[in-house]
Length: 360
Image 1 (cartoon, rainbow, N blue to C red):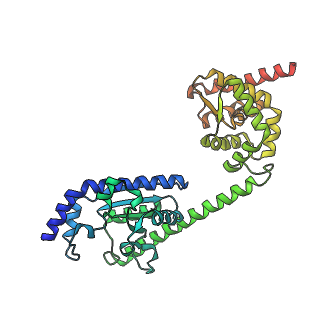
Image 2: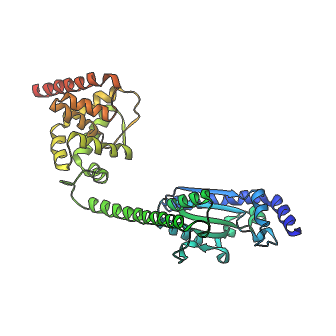
Image 3: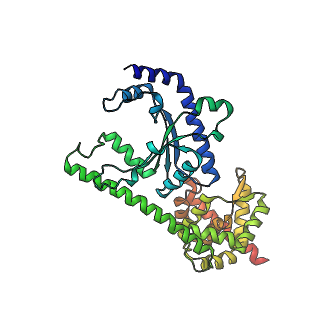
């Protein structure tokens, strides 16, 4: 009991150092992850509360003689989007920090098929001298932290398992244990499938970038490639930019929205898009100029803006008011009560501009 009292006194004395220790580790990790282009879901840090510490040191199955023996007073959790990135983060942690291998464990390597739960990677680490300032060295050099590295699905499993309160496979009936095992397996398969999908999407992007875009099916990846490579799109976008005085920039969400708009308009391949965009390019420019100059809220426009106005012009050419109204409703363009009138104006504007060009 005397040891426990000393541990708690040390905790009270050092808690502010543990808090600074956690923040320092978190700052270092965030900085490296950004530099290496590794995007993760989150980094959380915490210092164990005094109440939790009392509970831990009073357990009858473990004896602690000093606060330094408790390696999880400071704790961090890194949650990645993909399970394969767990290893990438782990490599960064091993490279940047001093690892206490004796107290670290990769629970994923446990081979027991009956093992209850979905497992993650745990390291106990310390700061290297190069990552501490002169004053920090005195207070932080002997501190340790436990860091957990999990995918977001591994984290979901751990949180649900914790909420249910069953950590041992022997604590619940056999049938329920089987259901837990099936769920664990499903999450593991989902993790693997997300890894595989990411890999296949990368390969698809590489294939699209190295190929001609004509006759390719329109999706977000192929449309970005088309917009960035098509001289026709670049020239029309630039004319719209000059006429409106608005700078062009890349807006990922905008280009993704164009896929749905093209699909609604009946444009599903690039050959059809090129032919009709070229044919209607002057009218597209006028539609864009009229609309953008009438709206003072725009500070910039996205590359591919000509395709946005092309969809409206292409529908207007056909003169189907119900189709245009459906387009306005689907993409929430214009106010709800005025979409029917708006559809009529679009067709009338198309006819007016067309007649003007025909006269010339």
